Image 1 (cartoon, rainbow, N blue to C red):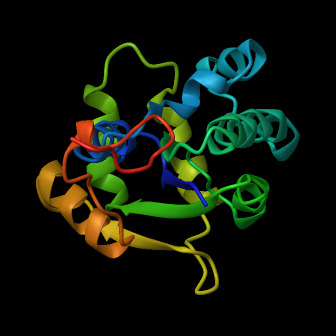
Image 2: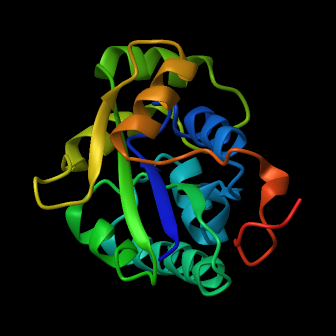
Length: 184
């Protein structure tokens, strides 16, 4: 079954950086979960208004559907998504893939400092407190791991690959499009 790694956590914790590095290391397609938000969600957040569960549901369903599209083609994927609540992760787990969560953890102060330095993103620093208030850590029965982002991003990715039991391909050209070893 294809694998879907969902890099989760509050805004500015390092989801995109981690996911991009994982994608490069594993050779799997990557998507930025924020790109799946409808315009109304982005407008609301840009105005400093936190999203509610009703706002998030269609967004989460679009992410789940993107995972399904790739899983149906036999492709492993990596996607960022805050996935702050278990109920949100339940929607994502409905995907036809082996969904594994990578929860990034950092002190709220560090994340706030990162957010204050970030340019060109619709999420204002005023919403960070609501993200941490909403966050429900992964439960024991949820497939995934928690990693503190207290080391360089490359070390976070190495921990993720080991902890999620992922294997980079020996050679990216050693596989046919269907994922079977080729004769080379």
